[in-house]
Length: 347
Ligand code: PMP
Image (cartoon, rainbow, N blue to C red; front, top):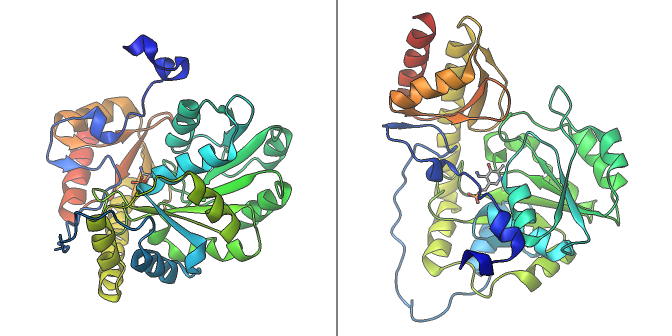
């Protein structure tokens, strides 16, 4: 049956998510998940009826959280679905291209490949910023540009002035998508207020990270009304199950937001603890990170990754040479990871 699949799909290597890679252990710091498992009790009535396509209470709650108006928000099955919708809505398969700047999140490439859309890459500079001159040279047939800030896996923020320059460079030609999946850990660095000034800006958000709801599959795309209208044409008729809308709305209530804020403060403190502890180890470089993870360079990254894996400490190897991405877990998980790495490197 595989031969019946589209050629592009036959050749596709699926995204190796942390879940697919597997592993056995009791410390999971490989998927940038939250260590907090918050409890919800959604009403499970009226499941005989289809849900609203865009549940009003949820949209209003997220718009208020993000400081935009309700018609500038679309809810999706995770930010991953937002990536796919943007490519499907704006790129003609076989004609148009997306552009992204590695090292960065892998799903931009996979979604484009699945849809049959060309992928252009312009690597980030040595300090992991946009290479605007090279991007300018590569814009032919590019309809969607993905920029991740804080960037996964490097953790850094992309310069806001560069984002504005990129938006101006591409006005009327391409959509610039700023992936802010990790922005809740550094909320002051969001570019959401630029939506008012730039009609070609779209912003990806998710409840999977700071809101500790990776299992819920709920994300959002923020943009002006015109882009949202286009995405509404291609989204599935009922993308948000009723229990998802219920739980997400509760997470975005005043009490839910206050809890998220406390948890973000704790995780940022754990991140500082991990960073301080790792950076004093011989030969180790810890890059500043604005999300809920740190990129760490070791003298021999692969060996460290395997040793931790064998010890039941599951981290994420990265495309950056000798670097491992470590999600910020509970204080105890950070302590045990740090203590393992310290003894491994000193032995
Ligand atoms: N963007 C980035 C940069 C991510 O790291 C992730 C999660 N791995 C996503 C988007 C997708 O998030 P979601 O769980 O909302 O689909």
